[in-house]
Image (cartoon, rainbow, N blue to C red):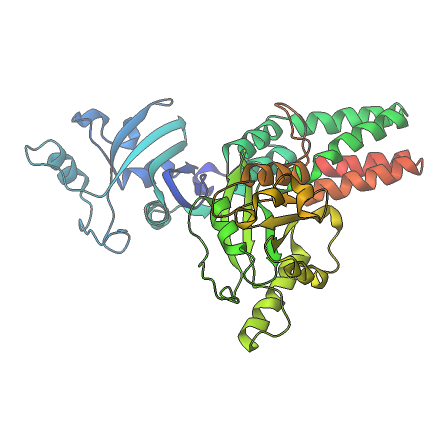
Length: 421
């Protein structure tokens, strides 16, 4: 394609939403002219105040001027006159003006614009660039233009969805080739007909499947139990602030209340559900049905009862279809028990794996979080470990494991190739 007729793309590289800084990549033959229509440098040197004067590898601080319909805050500098604008910059008067930005020239026809984060500022700048002849690009197209292989493209996309530094570091390892190298090693073992070693390697990768699939989405932990056993108070204590309404009347929680937090760098979402009972009113029964749906989808269920009211354990019987490995049993309100009943979990006379807690005093909360971690991430990846982080990776690895078990090396090779192709 003739360069003059090639498309110039403006692509938001940083995740949309809240953030301190957003980065927009502008690439193509019209990049320089499009940016020059709106960017005014603040160097107070006329020879350095336009994008055309930015050498490759250099950056300039300046202002992004908007037309009236593009301005995120309603600012309207009117039609942009380059000469007048430059004259204003060098006058003794303070310069207005639009959005403060940093423009970096990374190649002859490629620039990066760094502006305030959030939604309004980057969206407005991209609109300006589109009006100047660019096309709004997607991150997937940008990654393709960078020549990344499929796994690295997927890792780069997933990085923008990370919620914690710990999960981002694991994905950064995959972006830098950890998973790709592991798949290449597997393919080599298959070619060498080393089935046993290949199966061991696949199993090691699949050990991290659950962790990998939760690098960009939190584990869902649902609290369930009879009304008034302290589920909402427990959520508030686990979160460290009041997320749920707490009242001593049973049935206060009608809808599912969720809250996001992180423990040891792992993102989790706590769901406070309606108390499980049969004689609630119509609205409460709707909340109970929602609670049952949440239980079916939960990664982990905290079944809570009131340690001062053993009969509240009867509500546990309504929780069916949940694998026992996804359940932690919690005795709450232990601060209200007589001292001799609190000596050890065995004193509660229920289960050996019961966690005794007090939402009021915080007793048992560290032990509860520790138990959560043992269930959800018993083996955490170390720096540089290969981790499958997409449903597609996990499914294809499982298919590879099956093919190896059946002695079908060609099928195993094909499924491994599909991970990176």
